[in-house]
Image 1: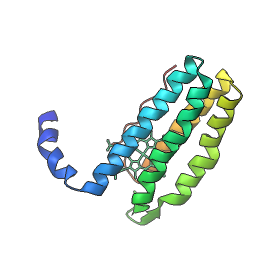
Image 2: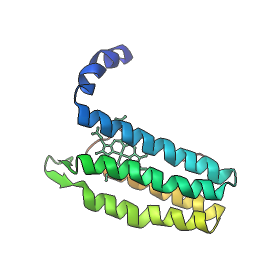
Image 3: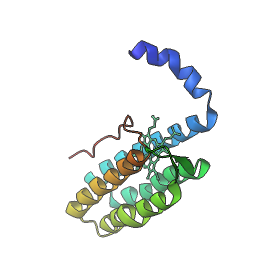
Image 4: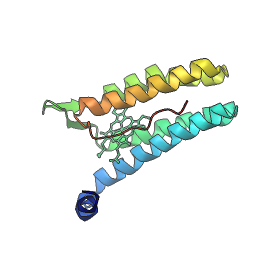
Length: 135
Ligand code: HEC
């Protein structure tokens, strides 16, 4: 199965826009986990600085392909979903980090991650795995 993936992958990558988005989403995931690690290490300012970098990865990805097919097959505009992610859990995370509140940060990271998943669910992209927030 894995070998098949490696055979198919170059063809999938031929679609360049999609490749760039994939790359950006992976970067967003990395930055989310980095921010969590920094927060757990008590490096609050560094964790806070990671938040706009994560946001930028997600928003650039959405901006380059803002309208996609939903799970139901109809076109869905991702920009309101992005705005909901930014104004909801992303803002919540920022404020928890600003207050250096460990408990609220844990809750905020989990809520943020859940809304990452929600957007993929709207698109029917259930195969997308977003890493769990480490305890
Ligand atoms: C507003 C919608 C939206 C939000 C919010 C969102 N994503 Fe995505 N995500 C997408 C779309 C669209 C794709 C598919 C990109 C493509 O293949 O063109 C995707 C793909 C992915 C992938 C799969 C990349 C691959 O290997 O193919 C990962 C991992 C991912 N997102 C992580 C995240 C994380 C982490 C967050 C939150 C920090 C997040 N996403 C927030 C829309 C979103």
